Image (tube, rainbow, N blue to C red; front, side, top):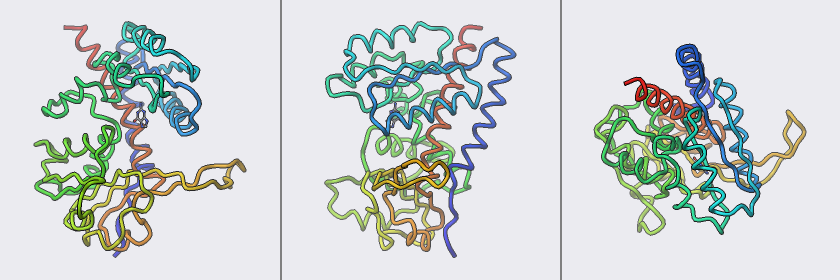
Amino acid sequence: MEAKIISGTKLREDILDEISEKTLELKEKFNRPPGLVTILIGNNPASVSYVSLKIKTAERVGFKEVQENLNEDVSENELIALIKKYNEDETIDGILVQLPLPKHINEERVLNAIDPDKDVDGFHPVNVGRLIIGKKVIFAPCTPAGIIEMIKRSGIDTNGAEVVVVGRSNIVGKPIANMMLQKNEGANSTVTIVHTATRDLKSHCMRADILIVAAGVPGLVKPEWVKKGACVIDVGVNRVGEKISEKTGKKIPVLKGDVDFDEIKKIAGWITPVPGGVGPMTIAMLMKNTLKSMIARVEKSSV
Ligand code: GUN
């Protein structure tokens, strides 16, 4: 039997509908919607396309959306001053600085400048610390949070499961490994992280009940690396070429994941496609974090 395809596109719609409903309630009760500011520096094509999708989605759920598009040569101090302005803005609940930043800007200084209570990306060291300690009310980074939501909503048993994470990035590998480790619903697993220095990638992957691949290497995971019936989550979004869109007639990138989808879907129990898998969930979770941020803020101010 072929694997069940976990569609992020479908789950995203369910989650966005839930968020839109909650946004209407908040607006009625507190006279304002959740507010998100997206800060984009320069015109890296992937970043421009991610940010425009974030803006569209924020508008779709009824948030206030503020766009800051800065020139590639903006100084680090100017960027930090802008972040500080939004830290003080009562109508803004989430501040997102799209990464990567230009080389002359220190990413750590920039991320540290964001108020941890508005850090809807979950990249501030305070939020990373809270995540590792296992605090409940936190901004979990959006891609890992989306992965957990996909696993939970597919009814996959994670208790004591062997989870193998391929990749140790700060955005995906390290946080998802820590989240799957927590004694929580949709987690409580036995976790291994493998990376570029791992001696025998294949033997680790073969043990996985849940294989989460975030390596950024197109087609890295081969069918013989996957256990029958495993859940395979492909986080890779690799641009491997360009094609003309049938819908718009414009050039669009050809995307390929980190796993060999066509062959692995014959072996796995569940698999996420690329595109249409983890990607759409990431943006839905960004909206969820922004909503959570406003709820936390209004609750705090009413005590
Ligand atoms: N660049 C790639 N992924 C992300 C993300 O999740 N958030 C931000 N801010 N930048 C990114």
